[in-house]
Length: 428
Image (tube, rainbow, N blue to C red; front, side, top):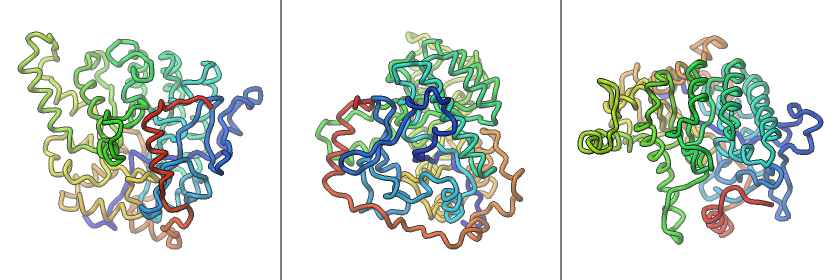
C-alpha cells in the first residue's frame, strides 16, 4: 500500500496538558487543591499536585525538533510546538502528518494517573481524576469529533471507585482506560490477588480496554547504577515483558472471558519468544507449578484472544506477524514523544508494512483500533477524506520543523541521572 493511501489511527499518542485544563471542571471549593503549573527558579514550568511533582515534559514534547534539541529536563510550553498542548494545533499537526486519529495518554499525571492517585486525600484525588477525565473527553476529544479515541484515568487506589469511574466514562463514549503495567509496584494489590475483579467485570460489561503503558508502574528496567543513558533507553520495552508474562499466567481469564488488555509503547518483536518460553514452561513445569488452562487453551491462546499490542515502525515484529493474531496488532504514532515518526509516519509505515496485503495493512493501521475501542471516525467524515494524502491537503501550510527550544547539553544528562536514580513521586 502506498503511503498516500493509508488511513492511520494511532493507539498511543500523548498530551502535554495545558495549564488551564482544570479550570472548568473542578468544583469551586476544591479549586485551591487542583494541580497547577509552577514557574521554577530556573525558568522551567512544572506541574505540581500539592506536594507531588508531576512528570517532566522533556522527551515527552520534542515533535518536530532535531535530535540535537531533544531535552530531558522539564521545559516550558513555549519551548515545544503548540500541537503538544493545544487541541486545534494538534489536529493541524495530525493533518500535516497524515494521521486521522489517535488515542492520547496523559503526561503530567503519569501514564496510569499515578500522581493524582498518590495524593493524601482520596476524596480529593477522585475529584481531580474525574475533572481530568471530563476535560479529556468533553474538551480535548469532543472539540474535534472523529479525531481522538478518548482514554480515561482511574482512581486505582480503590477498586470499587475505579469500576464506577470506568462505567461513567463508558457512558461518555470512552472505552479505553489506563491501568498500571504493575500495580504492586505502586503499592497496590497485584493482578493475581483477586482484588481487581470488580474492575475487570466492569471492563467486560462496558467493552473497555485496560491500557498498560510502558512506564505506568513508575519503574524502569534494572541496570547498573552507572550505566550510560543509552542502556535504559535501549531497555525501555522491558517492563512490557513483565506485564505480558504476568497476564499469560493470570487465573482470571475464565471468570472474565471478554477482558482485554493492551501493551502500549513496548514494541512487539520480542513477544513470540516469550510465548514460546511460556508454552515450554507449561510443558516442562506444570507438574509441580500446578498451573492449569481451560481445555484447548494455553499461554499463546490467552495472548491471541485477550492482549492487544502495538508498534511504531519496528520491522522485526512485522517479519514475525505469523506468530500473532493480526486482529490484535495496532499501529502507534507516539506523538509528541522522542520515538515518534511525525511528520513522516505514512512513509515510515509504508516502508515497514507496504509489502503486506492491503487487508492486513488496513487492519493494523486503523481497523483494529476502531473495533477494539468502539471508535468510528467514518461516521463523522467520509472515508475518502481520511487518507494521509487527503488530510495533508487540508493543512498544507503547517511548518513541521519545531523552531523553539534549546540544544541538548550536560543539564540533560544530569537530569537523566537524577530521574532514573530517584523515586518518581517526590515532595516539593
